[in-house]
Length: 130
Length: 130
DNA sequence: TCTTGACTTAGAGTCAACTTGAAGTATTAG
DNA sequence: CTAATACTTCAAGTTGACTCTAAGTCAAGA
Image (cartoon, rainbow over all chains, first blue to last red; front, side):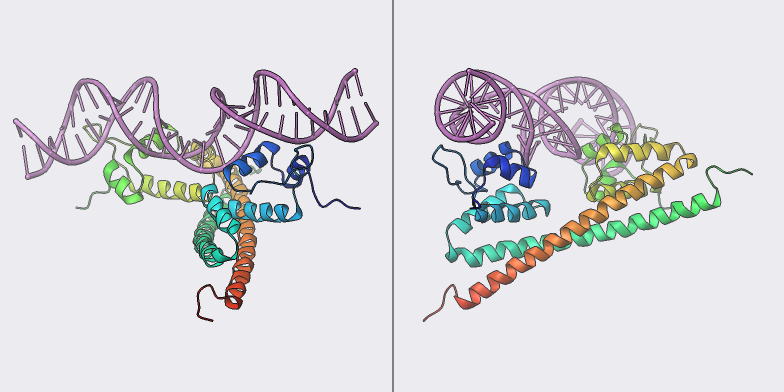
């Protein structure tokens, strides 16, 4: 029988987060209170893992924890908040699109600069006989 | 005669940075020591402005100040360091490409999620008679 | 029995990159 | 003369997101 519940240590290994951070997220309201085993240890369910993975996606795309927490709270209130949650995601999606566009612009500026260096170095080789 | 030199206040307005930050960058070695007017006030030359603009591009793409400073120091040493500088830019460019790719992946995950909400809301409209 | 992994509360420390404030001086435009 | 703008040094405060330490308890497995 595979167990569908994992410990905090296992989840830490799985996600690369520390157990500290996992408890910190729970205390911060990003993760809802996690179910416990008889001994009081946290038992994360598949659902919790999926949610955390989504949270990490929000994080790497630059959503601040406070906002993630707000989204989490809406989620905890059930389907009624679907519209509000979608609005939050759409807002974030736009912000993200803007950021990606900005990065792409900078990337091409970088490419230009690198091209200039390439030419400069081709003309005046840094180390060569004659 | 248009003046090619601008004051710290003007540059602050131009870039959206504070004068504090501009002096901070200079002290941190990101900007080389800026030329002074007779009264000791900083006079930024067009070149300084261009360099600052490039620095800001490095910044928004996530290069840490310490690394920017290092690049600035190479630059100050002249053409000899062209290869080293190009290497730094190429390294950063790769890092940036990875980041952009990661963001794009997350963006499509977000789109999926938004799509799910859209269907959910279409099925069970949030506010509607009957 | 001892190690491992977990639990709790409470608080301090870290890091980057500013940001603010104080305190005093100097120059220039109106 | 006064207001605006700038200069200096030095130090303390802020923000976000952890990260770590302490101090003590508990329970299951080899």
